[in-house]
Amino acid sequence: METFLCKDVQAREQLKSKKGTVAVIIAAVAAYLEEEEKALRPAMFQRRPAEVSSAWRSSGREEIMRMRMLWQRRIVPR
Image (cartoon, rainbow, N blue to C red; front, side, top):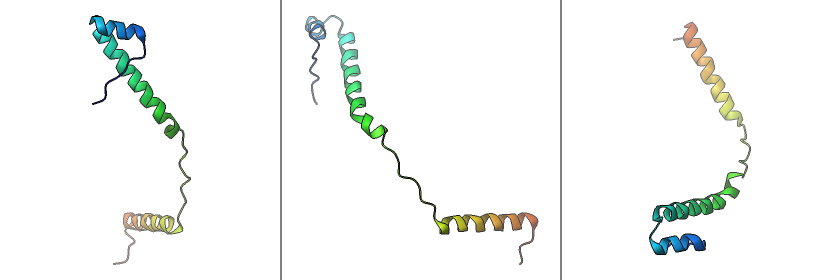
């Protein structure tokens, strides 16, 4: 487990005196979350490649819709 090194002198003093340990813990967690967010920012703004429409996929969907319509009208040959 990695220990969090606090760069803030005031927070370090509070930790030594054992007063305000909750505040120090909250500050450490907030600093950690901020570092994690900074690391994830570039990935958040990457664009996805545009989807390429496939002729096979669209014709398959059209056929499914056509068959469904025929079943609803009860025109399907048996």
